Image 1 (cartoon, helix red, strand yellow):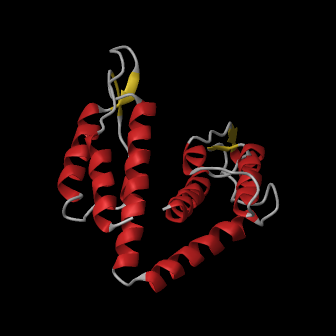
Image 2 (image 1 turned 90 degrees about the horizontal axis):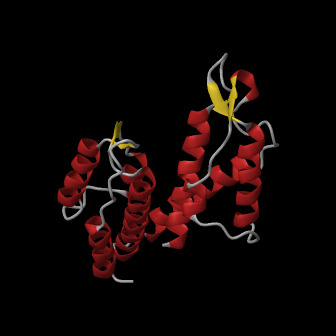
Length: 194
């Protein structure tokens, strides 16, 4: 894949737009989504939008906003294409060593977490705060371990779509560390698929 082909893929992803929900359904706040895409249209040609920034974007909610699933799907496509373009740029620019080192560090962090025992992979939620049910998270981690060992075949979309039942207090994993780990998994998968 040439750098030009990678850039075209990003521009194609930017042309896609999610649809709005009905007036009585909640979705992402339209002003937030529109502002992000306006920013992205300016930032992509200047090389100022990264896959990590797309992965980290968040929106408020409103009735009649943009459909959550459709918006997430558009963002996932944009993130994947940006990751591919970033890899192509890095490899074409002679940054193979830096790319390989980043990929190796990311792999070590992900695989190290996957090697932890069930029920102990992540810190527990505090007091009555909501967390994720450890069994649900550990089940996904088992699939991810199998995937990275060459068994189960998962895609970044499978990780993005993962849902965990809630658990309060010490009975649940804290949400933020689990979410951060899954972001690293998606980054690793998209950089590898690129």
